[in-house]
Image: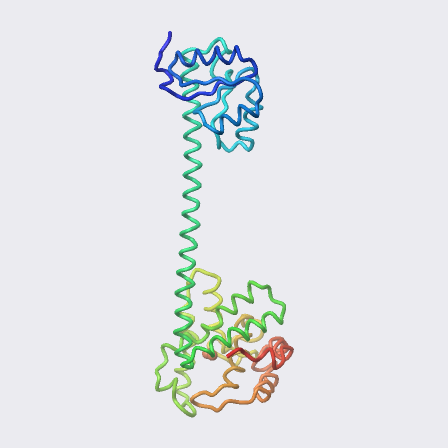
Amino acid sequence: MEDADALGGMTVLVAGDDLGAVQAVRARLQALGADATALAGDADAIARAAVADPPAAVLALGGAEAALRLRLDPFGLDAGPPVIGVEAIAGGEDGVGLLAAWRLRALAERSALRVRQSEMEGVLAAQAVTRRRELEAARADTLRRLITAAGYRDDNTYEHTERVGQLAARLARGLGMPDREVSLIRQAAPLHDIGKIAIPDSILLKPGKLTDEEFEVVKTHAVLGARVLARGGSDLLETAETIARHHHERWDGGGYPDGLAGEAIPIAARLVHVADVFDILVHERPYKESWTVEAAALEIAGGAGTQFDPEAVGAFTALGPTGWSHPF
Ligand SMILES: [Fe+2]
Ligand SMILES: [Fe+2]
């Protein structure tokens, strides 16, 4: 039984060592409706021809299959035209009939589908990477805006929060913390006082000493800040939440909001506590004059073991005046 349309104009490259056999199979395939070409001889030359003008399938005769597949798809990625051994579709070179034509067509179509599938998977993976990058960029952008807002609320110049981020990161590095943690602290520390957006100006900007009630209101900024940053879904926001909540805890347990003591206070918060107090001391605030660097450093050293983590103070002292100063 013959069917001149069985292969519907499918392009087939018939390849092998024996020119006579190759030409005979090409004639059979042409009779079955293929757009067939024949090449015999050197596997490299055949592979080059198949790459230059890829057929829907390469039909390999007389054991040429392995050599051609090695050249056309060495990693089994279904990348180039499929190499099909004649044995896979027929009993042998002489048995190339209608049934073989159908099998050849089915194998070629399956291979084309696999190629399309892997192309689409590639496109989808690239889109997923792009979306993730966009999401990360959007998150980082939002965070930057939040940091700017926090900075303006704190001292109207945005610089205090930045300086605290830098000094806390230097302390973290001084303690030998891993780069990633140092970087998280550097980025998260400027948000330590974000909760102050909820504290009224009449208290926050009050010159002079606060009443006990007013100070109780100020203390709420730790919990409020942590609430703003909670469930952020990233290490950075988690670090920021921890710092916001605990940057007023004291080593001796006398701080707020939770009265944690010693190593129960997260290390990032212990470092920010030192950096924050130092920076406030050496700069003017509505309620105080600025201190000299030497006086502030003495105050920090004097708080080791009571207000501050002694190791954090050790890292602070080791930095020295150049390490404490900032490019602002
Ligand atoms: Fe604070
Ligand atoms: Fe602060």
